[in-house]
Length: 184
Image 1 (cartoon, one colour):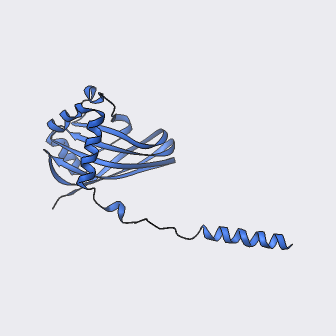
Image 2 (image 1 turned 90 degrees about the vertical axis):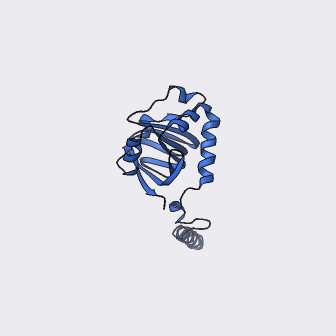
Image 3 (image 1 turned 90 degrees about the horizontal axis):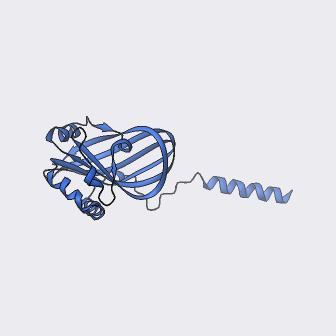
């Protein structure tokens, strides 16, 4: 009887600990902090290290959006979120947020970087007006050596992704949505 009481007391103690908040080192406002120029520069350098031919896209595009870290997780229903910076003719014009909701057969988590090139002014204006939505899995090019050689703009947009880490299995449906906040 005494062992059962000790066991129950221990079980209650363990279960009660699971309801306490663990927030050491976590800043809930951190996700809303704008991406730094240093993060963008490092991301561009990582893309160019994988495929130097991407420099042609940076040089010729009317504009581009760089998302250094997009975090994605799923168990049946999935989501992704990331922040980035937007450039027009090489000049910073504002910050952007990416969000994604997917459903289907999917499981895992991953982090990746994404660069979206706007080949023409109209495509960039659609992005800034938040009228652009697409499935990156269907239209993005995973950057490997020489991958940009075969890449082309589709509806004025070219998308490249670079894996940072994680493992994800997916056969899902969903789209990325963007919001744009102009620089002051």
